[in-house]
Image (cartoon, rainbow, N blue to C red):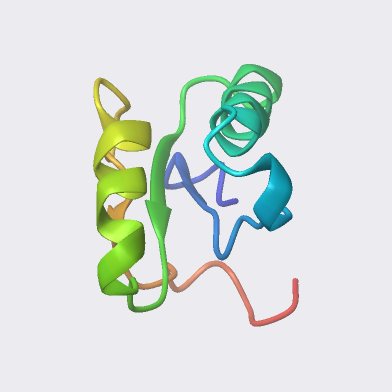
Length: 79
């Protein structure tokens, strides 16, 4: 997260296959947004074709929409 730019990134949320499509990843992302309000949310890497529907649904109505965006210059890798 970069509070200066008001940006946050998430990458590779994972749910065990038997619990997929139960809303757990979306709930986790919602909790993260609630804990860090006022940020626009993005991802870093390429999305697998089968994950595009998830990111589209998860990003609906969310500032930034979980679209791909590079890390800003204020954030260093691993920090």
